[in-house]
Image (cartoon, rainbow, N blue to C red):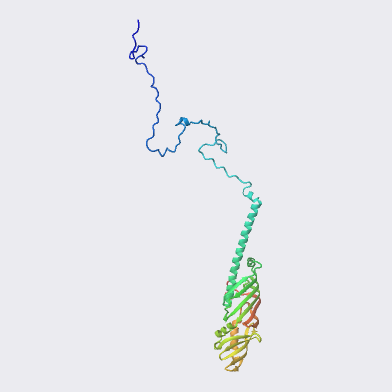
Length: 340
């Protein structure tokens, strides 16, 4: 017996799978790339396309290499993320004394120390010298009633002189305005071997003092006019004659010729001739006034200072005063020496 022909819709029992039998998964559909809509994302547009996105661009990856973990210099592996401990400061060889063993460092230290010491000594020397100049200048200015400047000798150094109280040389100069009431008188003083010590009766001693005094002709005229009553009013000029060592005081009513001399430790103008109203007058009419005038100007100086010599020059009168082995007055005796 033959089976009837089978059409497309005719399935036999063994060709059709039984009802309820599980069926396999549907075949996989190929993936489809969905294009990005809109402008590129600014955050991700810089990310390069990796080989994972494009299999055709894949390159063989190098096998990873193994590196040993960082070592801790004090033993043990370095812990990731932890700060290494700060090593203790290395002690130099010998500590502070170590660098002193270096000849260059030692020489540098010695140079600095010497430089500082020298600077300190020089600064102290200059300050002490300046202060002493001011004190002595003020004492002389008080005596002569004019500005005065003083300077001390450079040998030995002033600090040494000050510590020992022994001053070898002092130079003093006045401004030249006046000495006491004598106008136009200038003095230069050279003092040697000064020793400051309080003995109860004096403030010290002076080995020698020499004062050279210049008195100008115009200063003599001005002084006579200011100091001598009546007579000074008639003096209009003063001229000097170095040849015979005289000076002439001239006025509208007459003239007086006098010769400067050293008398009793001071200067004196010895009248030689007096003329007035065309005839000669006795010298006794003028001499007492001139003696009083010169006496109050050139006598009674402290420390036994007296006149040694006098000379008439073209510009005036030059004289020298001096004193030797004299005692320095105490401040109680003469206020001008109180600062010493």
